[in-house]
Length: 436
Ligand code: HGY
Ligand code: MN
Ligand code: MN
Image (cartoon, rainbow, N blue to C red):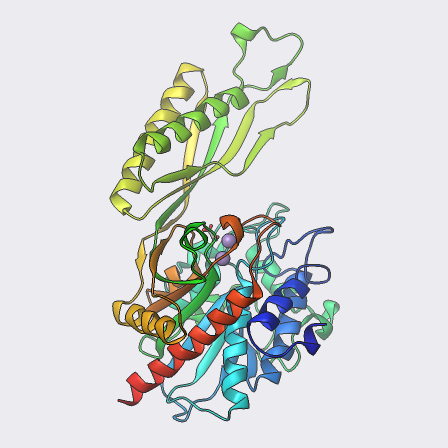
């Protein structure tokens, strides 16, 4: 029972476990929690209760992020934001995202029970769209908060054709009832995306952003370490490709006469993999989603759509690879009588963490008995967007076998407890530095 657990890291893990199934998941037999769905609203309801129990006042912002606020000794001082995301990929693990939110709530809960106020308010922010698993755009909600979201990014629709505007407008639609919404929510009903960009924080009004996250890679485990200080996040480029050939009868179209979009796309994917492999650096390129149309066994595929995700800590290296990929795609298309069109979904620059906050995190790790260790993040995080607004810090927590974006994702509650203690130490040190 989650409620019977003592506060701290183990409770944070148990709360993530609790949110791993219906009604907090949109799929049966696993976790898929997408932005602005019933599961998303249900998770916000549970979080609202936990935030209130930890002494926070809770609200939604115009991007439907859930925010709990714990006042500081100086009411209007710039706030420390602690957050992560509560949306997930399809068939997700339980900790990618929510753990950072739960640990933030635990940190505030500990301060509240000790009657401690910092020289700044703390806000725990549960971001809504980090993964981009519903709409073809990622980090919409943190980009809105950081003030780096362009209005045209809001003109997106999900696979079922539901626009972001309509999803937001119906998120609090009266016919759904207030039961879908967090208790005591103060925000008036969403007017679709009309007010979305008002989620933006005023520059200077945020002291720092702290995000704790499972590592999603094998480095900490290999080093025998529970925790690490993140130095920065790799640059990400996401593209979407459409290959067009000619749909035709699978029984009558001879092999020589085919313009098969799927076999062409297959060759393109191998070329993408080859370019990334040949680079032999931290560069990675992934085709993670593919759709072949019309999708019938007896029809030569006429159209294929697929995603391309390219990352590197070195943006120039990433961009060179993207260029090489575009050339390779054109080459494959022309050799097969196909057409290929590529669009950019997003371009997230590499995002270094703040050097002074990294030092503070290292010191917090050392105080808690952990050898300071620094590592870079290949995975994207809301901290990438938040870096445009304020100094950012990230704490990585060991996960088993480096597995993530997979239901097998696992974290030891003892490691979560270590992270909780380190976060408290970091907050204390930040308080001392502000007071000094
Ligand atoms: O795609 C990413 O790196 C992140 O997990 N959203
Ligand atoms: Mn993820
Ligand atoms: Mn994540």
